[in-house]
Length: 256
Image (cartoon, rainbow, N blue to C red; front, top):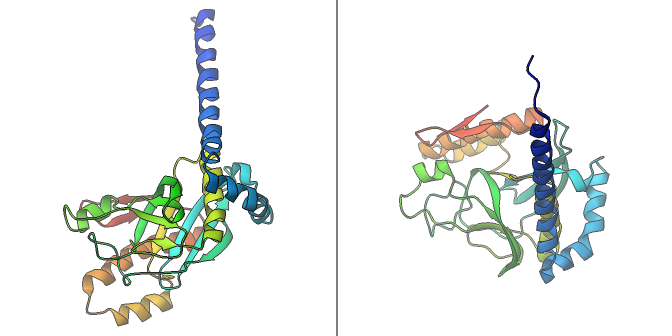
């Protein structure tokens, strides 16, 4: 059996160490950099202890937590779920009231329609100096929106933010966005590269699907869309874990 030369390990081990230290620096540095902004510093000063208590009450350490955000438009609620990296199931940490709304039930399909998107997204931006106090960008338009929406006129800049005003976003009060922003900064600093955000028109249980299906029965495309995204709602309700979501060529979601 051929032996691996000693010099191979002398080269490889420092490389592993460099990658580990670089990753640690990048994640720690994100939290440090964010706290250089006055509003983020204030959020951590006022809310870090409280947020840790929310997590510890469920047996989860904030310093290593993975989070998931779920939104219900009709109920005007935003949920924060979390788990430890080795755990399969998420636990509900906190439910927040969305304090203003715009548009109607149904997905966002073009710029200027005032709609809050519906579907499967993730946090893609942190804005510590937002015009709306603090804000977390949502990755609209996603691959499905780009197929089903109005080509060349999809719009964007959808956020979870403070200031309690909106045109297509999901606002909380300034006090509550501090808590959510601290959670999101901690998660990214822990190494969570993608914070999923699932946005539903309503809690998509059988009773509501029947109720809203009847109310919007003349809008066949909308009801079909809701039945499609209901699969993601059902999967999480049954498993308390996230489904694997992809987008088909026709814009529909595949949920497994």
